[in-house]
Amino acid sequence: PGTMIAMTRKVGGFKGFVNADVIEYERNKRIELLGSFWGFQYTHTISFEHRGQQTNIQEAVNIRTRWMFWFGIFFNMTLGRTLKNELVSLKTLLDNHGDRKPAQS
Image 1: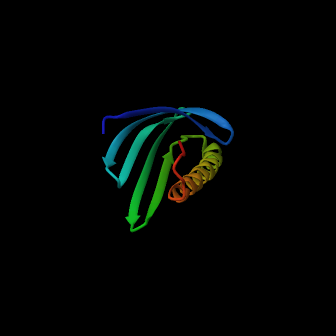
Image 2: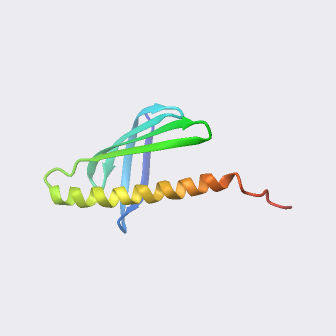
């Protein structure tokens, strides 16, 4: 807690600035962020559950779009697709990590 994160994220083909504070952190288990994305307040929780050779990752994002109900539905579907694609890419990288050959000199 007390750490601030700032970055640009691309969701649905559009870039947006993300500014968040880490409000809860449990090493190797959980991180929770509270911040702003495209001007909308959100919370983002990522949990890690280790099971032997496997780690399950669960993400939950809650974005307050206020009175923009229809935009919230669209944004949540688009963000969900983006997060799913990012997790698939992460899994591929991690699964292939053990197969890498050391660089030759």
